[in-house]
Image (tube, rainbow, N blue to C red; front, side, top):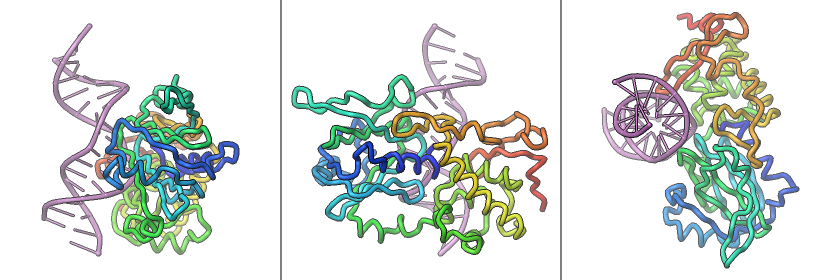
Length: 295
DNA sequence: AATCGTTCCTGATAGC
DNA sequence: TGCTATCAGGAACGAT
């Protein structure tokens, strides 16, 4: 599932000069599942509003991909669980846009194409999304930045302003550490994979009550969060299941995972058996010997 | 105001 | 073999 490193990989790809996405204009949109577009909730209006708009900037906030368009409009793409953008090419045939490249289709994970943006530079951006949970929204940029959903997002863990003091402040919230780490209103970008990996590395039990964690352990979680996210970006993300980059390629961080989806295997630190439990309806993987709950 | 449960989806897998 | 049931999982939403 795309978390911060995966979304960052996509955004860096979109900003790659060679792709010429910046400065291109939207020509049209195809979809076989209009419900992906949440705003406006009318697909024809969405198409009309998007047509001819020039891409000025592509950036990321948490797990959201944001295309700032000329004229004070922003296109938001959230890939949710199984969505990923793929860049390909199109050509015109019999008066219609035809995809001549939808990213490598020999990979089953790239076959669930439900939406394609056609650009005026001959490129297309296709959204592959097995579970159709992704969301697409078109906003007035000012309105978006003033919106509740944007303003309530927590700090970016890799930004300079995210100091240990800041981390302690946002984490002064009750609950189990894993759930709090994954709360986008506390910190953005961490999902199930990286929460498990961060807590394993920091040797903290996922169900540990946040308010009971010692300062030295908070510091460990803080440093580990930055460290793991940075390493995962370098590896271009994790592809345990769906994630692919813009070219359809897998990320390499899966090789570095130590507990996520390793139930029953040996802990790489102490050889105890990795366990899986449910926390708030989500699976959590951890080492019962290294990550002690305490009181 | 904060928190909990439900909902959206469908491929993979298990069970019969 | 082929059917049905169960599950994963981010985040918005309604209910409490």
